[in-house]
Image 1 (cartoon, rainbow, N blue to C red):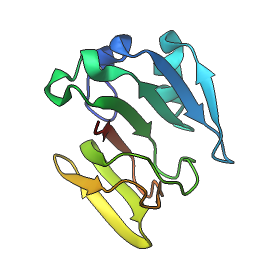
Image 2: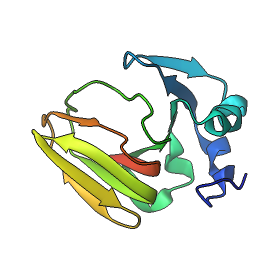
Image 3: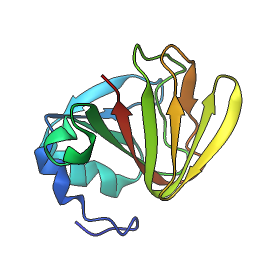
Image 4: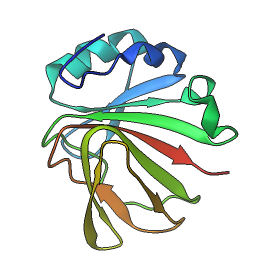
Length: 134
């Protein structure tokens, strides 16, 4: 599917699970076949998990993709038990990491050390990978 992000989302079919994030930061599992529908709505952050079979350069790490329209809701501030690299595929990913606001632009990455508080703010539309290091 081509869209405003100019990305072909055909890799979504390699995912193992998909969800949307509601206004209160809760995730709701959706069918993988409905991901295009939710992306087109431009209302929710869409998360697709289990993309290691497609993004094999990151093996053995876990790979999730987040498609977030501008101002879309996202998960509340949280920590992860592993180091996570955020890599922006398209747009600009805005986040608060350890109390500091950061922006990750297309083609750039940032490392979030394990147990570091962070959350997405989605000031801009973005497509990013979250790579959980094992």
